[in-house]
Amino acid sequence: MEHLINRFPMRPIYSFHDVPKCINLRYTFSAGDMVEWSQGKLHAQKPYRYQDVDPLEAQHFANYQFFRSFRTINFKMHPTWEKANVVARVWAALVDYDTGTISGNWHLLYVASSSHSEEEILPGTYKECSELINTIRIEFNVNVLMYPAAVIDLLGAATHDHSSDFILFDSLDQVALCREGLQILPRNANSKTETSKVGKLNEMNFTETCLPSELLYDIFDRLDLRSLNRCAQVNKRWNSVASDPYLYRNVDLKVYWNKINGNTLDKLKEKLERVRKLDMTWCDEYLIESKEINFNILKIVYAAKGTLTHLCLNHIRSLSKETLERIFDCPNLEELRLQNINFDGIEDLPTTSFCNRLKKLKTLDVSLSFITTKLLVQILQNTHNLEHLVMDSCKKLGNLEPILTVVQNHNQKLKSWSSSCSFKKKQNNSPIYEEFGKLIHLEELNLNYCEPESPHGSNCLQRIAFNCNKLKRLELADWKQLTDEEMIPIISQCKQLFHLNLNFSSRISDMTLGRACENLPNLRQICVVFCGEITEEMAEYYKETYPNIHILH
Image (cartoon, rainbow, N blue to C red):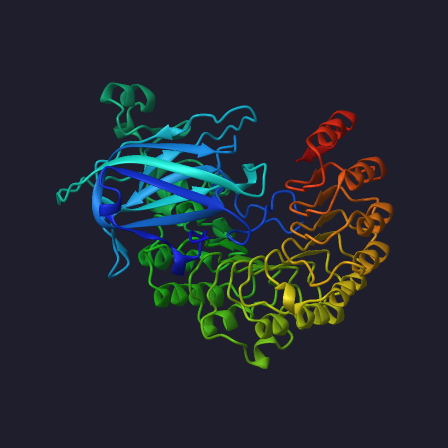
């Protein structure tokens, strides 16, 4: 599969001559392209700042680049196979590929409806853009997918135009302040409407605001970052209050990825000296060079070393060795997310970087990254309180044994393990998988697309079933040699199991489906997509017999 989400070295580049009048892009989700569904899982990231949560929950994106610029006339999308609208937004921009900079702004072409329907795709909003573009960015929300794969056709009409005329616009809404509070005014509102809503703004004296500072702090603490920035422009007093680091304890910059640049981060650095939770996902997209983003992260982490507890740097292309050392120097860090990081030239870190540090780390997510086994082992040896380990689709983690060995010795509190698509079958045999049985606190185990070399006749699942009796979620997708007999210990011992994934396990029959529905009292979802031995008639029978269980077939 060529079009890998967030795999920037492998993004497709299209020639304009291939699409003279139309953009017809087919995007296929498949195993290894994205992080597994995280919604509802123990290791799922909780919002750092609720005021800035993305209502469409976009987690992944794909960029389509064209050699020549063009203008879009109309943009329409036609998803196939899935009823759910997995496309959250579509952006367009004119990018200088030589320098990696944006000419102008990112323009929003499409935004999906925030309401979901199981019966039909609710129409989103298409927006016109008269600017020249050569890059299309598509954001996805995979949590709405019913199946583990989907094909999306994206169709848009375009015309060839080399005009250099640009109409740049500011996407920020105008903000008017009145005695009743903050009021957002549309940019196209006429003067009469503005006067009637806002009143006599000229007669208001903002310098003599009677509100006490404590009340201003309480009000500003409930605002999103954009509104807070606007409030800082009212007068000196409001600027002083709105710039207080107290209001920036929890910061989520993901929804502002298209506005973040070097100047923005320079202004934020002083305000983030007491930050506890910081999410900078996607914040280096074309606007910041790797050296500049590393420098800013270094400054922020150094200033907030004593207070930082949650740090998310997903899809920051390249983190330097110095930046990683500074991150590991934070003694109170509890959650660290480094999805899709290159780790270029970073095979390991000095032992002094881990001396008496990372003691409080509970969640580590390195999915889609190029982290090496040696570096991961080094981190795990110093995180004795680790509870959640996520390493889906890591290309350089080929051997399971050294990682599982260090987890047994140093991470006995582990509750969730997710390694979908990370380990090769030829390098891992069944006896290694038996060692999962020593992790007695496991509640979630994701081994999708990680089938051992010869599971048949092995007691690896039996060992897991008898020792990990707290297991609530088990995912064994694409275990093609898995049989009904090997699933008996899991069904008979793991009574707390509420989610079971057996997709693409071709030797699983309706016998396992029936046993699971009958003997697992807490089961709420079982996935048996493309299990060739399960007939459509039996699947429908169990759906009617057990309406409380969501059976995906």
